[in-house]
Image (cartoon, rainbow, N blue to C red; front, side):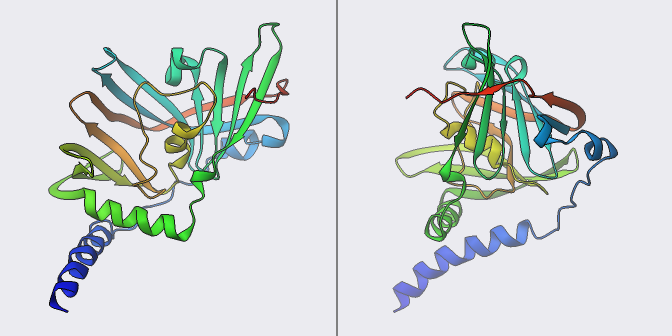
Length: 247
């Protein structure tokens, strides 16, 4: 009986701690006046008022640079441009727009010069209750908070030692609560189309939708949020014709 109670406390105490450290409410980012006139998905027009900018280094691939991801804080929609996010890792696409509900649309030009778009849905972005519970348990098990905190760009981040079930390796990860969903960023790792970021944000299995990675450091990879704020961009997708993805 005592042993069962001990293991129960080992699980519940970290979960309680995670809730208390992020207890402070995060203020929502209101829609600006431009969104009221420029957010028109039905007309093939998407307005993004903010952007997330990361500096990264992929030591294994011997690459470094900057990633810019445009964001609509109201819906959590994100826009990834070829020139500033996925670069050479998506040669056939010009931009990608993703939503927290798992829907992604890829816009590009085919060999004949025709503008096409391909839609894909990532079902992992809508986990069932059992998966959500496992996610929280894994977070409490493998993300161990340190005493380090910082506030940048209006976001309070906390540092964690990130462990793994199959390795004794410990990486450093900083996380911030956000007033918008960040799953459109994490879910990009699951799409089958040929698009990927220079570094991996594959942490949906571990993180809630409102937990943004603001810094990550491992033996082979480093990335850090170096800017978050207003950076208006309007994506015009009118003229792209729907095309089926080739299996």
